[in-house]
Length: 251
Image (cartoon, rainbow, N blue to C red):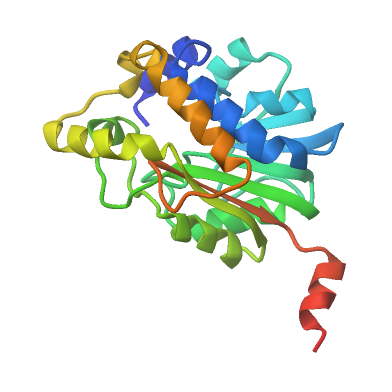
């Protein structure tokens, strides 16, 4: 990611509509799966804009390989632990965390193989804990913002669920999100062809509050249903316990 993008993230994480509604989305999908007083990993945390909320449930370790991101995170969220490392080579013991959250990291060009990264996330989560992923959706889409964030790939819902399964986890939730943004994003991709720009430089309110209202309507739907696609896709996996493995092996 361009270094200036980290500064933009830190500056608008409390005011930009996408960060606010994404935290709400993650709380609704993951919050109930976090044990009180647990230990949680925010892998590829950036400035903490999408994962620092887990500190309401327990202790958080924010990991990123970019020193500037961790410096900004320390300023924004001083109570959170930090580690400088690559998500593909996590410096933690097996089962060190109760849950791991990874938001818009696997899409980056720096991730040589997303399968390796998700297996690492599953390795450091205890049996019965969860691995939660949120990544850009619609594989064919490439926008000006993708060039700023060094996005090398986007995912379908099936792609992301497949990564969770390949890591040996039980897929407990898989869905698209921000589905209402797919048509305008496709138009923007055509208009922005060849350009580089950040979405964080504009539309902090989300068209005067229209976009966050649409996001909250969608989130109510997602409480009981899943969507086949979206500008983002989500997958949540549970690390198998000994009992789960035994059930699988029972003829």
